[in-house]
Length: 296
Image (cartoon, rainbow, N blue to C red; front, side):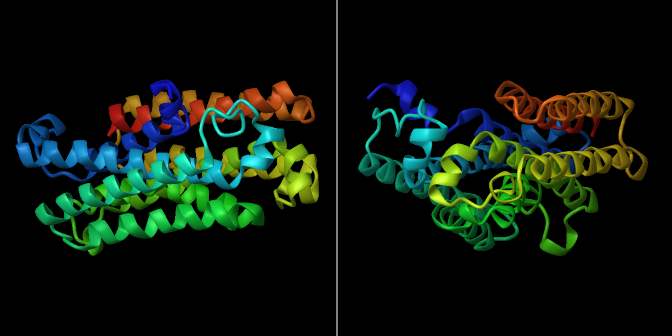
């Protein structure tokens, strides 16, 4: 099996974005003079690297088990993915999923041993591994609840990283606010993906907004959630001590989201518009990450 195929099933771009959220969580939560000063300490550098790997492997494992359960629907919706095109067997996908989750748990145990929250770190990882399995197995078919689960799980890296340094009660407020804004924005993209997958979802009874309520409703949900997401990030500039660079990248994010929504308003039934809107919402996520990296 090609190495490229093993990486492809992880959906590495999404997993990398999640890993970066862990790094940003540490950037916001540390109390050193600068993040570079923080990273000079070997213990902190190890925490940062392992935290990134943990989120990457949990996200990659969730994507793998999701493709395992979705293989028949993906033969219709996403035939170019490794499982439906036959380059990876279901048995191999299960072993790969178990390996990725095992790696994440071991690394979480290492971090727990050198941080303030001890056993809580691996328990949190185990919990979200379970969330990923339940989502892929049952919750995805539920539609809106599954969409919200994805949004929250994708944004949990911010507070997760903060717990390497703080007790639960001392996690900075900006961390929870960042998680909220990111979760809402990420959820909006799930509605667009539901629009793209109607053919297979109808066949297999997946209750997305687009499948059960129609494309117009899915478009409205996308626009409302995406605008709420960017509003949250814009508001952060006024609530917290963030630099002008944060605002610049958030304005870029605003433009990306508005463009994505404009494509759907122009022709929500056009597959290319749906595909481009989904891509743009992912780029909006990148803009938010850059805003937090440079502006915080």
